[in-house]
Amino acid sequence: MRGAGLISRVAPSLLGAATAFGVGRAGVSQLSARIPARALLCQHSLNASLMRRAYSTEQQQQPPPKDKKEGASGHRSVGGDGGLKDALGLFPSSGPLSPIGIGFFLLTSAGIVYFFTVTKEQVRAEREKAKNKEEVAGKAQVGGPFKLIDQDGNTFTDKSLLGKFALIYFGFCHCPDICPEELDKIGEAMELLERNSKTKDAVQLVFVTCDPQRDSPAELKKYLQQFHPGFIGLTGSVAQIAAMCKAYRVYFSKPPRVDEGQDYLVDHAIFSYFMDPDGEFVDVYGKDKTALTMAGDMEMRINKFLDAGRKINK
Image (cartoon, rainbow, N blue to C red; front, side):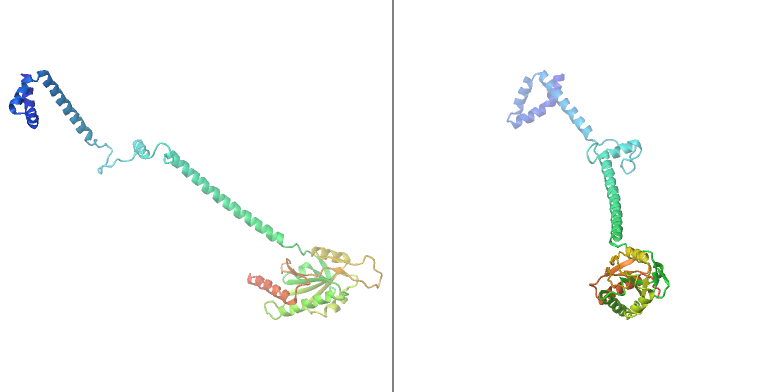
């Protein structure tokens, strides 16, 4: 009975197949009668297996159930340990894009920024320090304290020059040619400065003798009247003159043995030293400088001093 039922269920399928191959209904009946019941049972088992596989496939294609932590919008909330694990799960466990790789990159970047920031500051400080050294090294150490006597017999020191620019020349009254030429040039430079109200009376002229044995205050006063009325002549003992010449880096030499009344020459450096109102060395003018060049340079430096808000005692 069971086999007959199976035959009745599969008969339509057999009939369709037979028709497709040109076999009639009578042929199908004959063929069905010849199929053993065991073969039909095998066909039934095969159909059942196919139905189970189809059901399993449908179950796999269905969407998974929503998580309890999903919100109304259907998105999974990131919170708690599970949320953190889900967030970290977005990154690979190893490699440059892993949490460890990204952390190492950020730490390295911060170190590089710090290194270059510190290095830049150190370089700036070193440059500033080198600049200061160059300024100090490029500025000659000229000048210093001294105490002498002027052409009127009054005490004159380095403090007497403070408040004004000063142009200091070293020579001697018995000089036959060099000193008169340089003093004439200095007088011409002063006349050029006196044409400008800003530079007029801004520079004090000073003549220091390198021959104190013969150049007395009276001798200095008489000698300097030939060049410019603004000159102050200074003299003193041999030791005092030598000390001032050393402070201003001035070379001078005279014969070691000179009889009284004997004429002689003094060898000395031919420079005029320009000092600022603070007693600091500014520049030096040699024999090669003209009166116009000297006046132009002094005027520029005086204007720069005044433009900085400084004052000159006149």
